[in-house]
Length: 312
Image (cartoon, rainbow, N blue to C red; front, side, top):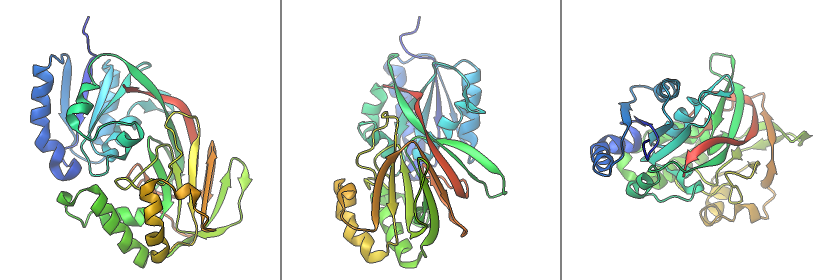
């Protein structure tokens, strides 16, 4: 019997501005010289391809599917583990080699940013269970869709930030690119009026910059929007950022990087924990789900406790 899980690597060659593509040959050689046997590899070719590849691999009896790329690649692979809300292969696990810009999920998992150290965790067969978030939303074609998220989903200004992020060259790194995109968005974005329901409690409608629903602690390359979040506590952390503008954002930055935004005394910040959240608006409000833009409000978020095994 193999000492390692039967493994399928899915590599996004565009992740991290081409970082995954450049580093994969060395990673492959390290695996082989290190005695990691029984693995196959495929490069993604388009958006959504990683989900298809993961599903196919699990149906072909692979025990671990490894996402090699950024948080968006991990997001796609995770969604390939499920078909109509059910795990395709019970006992299969997710492996992670984070080579993207943000790498926020591995922060939530307490892992190193260095791929060499991440790689060591793929050996052996030990795993851990983590929670997932699940979101039902309106797709651009007008249909209701569902998907899972591992780290953070949100609505509001972050969707605008993501659109601007592509203007920044990959060599700048995640933190600088996200910060620059955020500053630009806060100059131009118009906050939207939303209605929020948290575990059945309907809040007063308000104009909001963002509603962040978190399983992990940070996004944007280290902005700790949910410092109390734990990836296996069976709860979502909710950060409601009310009518924020550029000055509010600049003043909040030290707290976001320090992980103390939940202690803010500002009336524009609400921090809660919950199992279910619903957000709606009469205006067009874009979603961000693990760095991807699948659609817009209305959206229903819920926690899926211990929803997926991750290679420990």
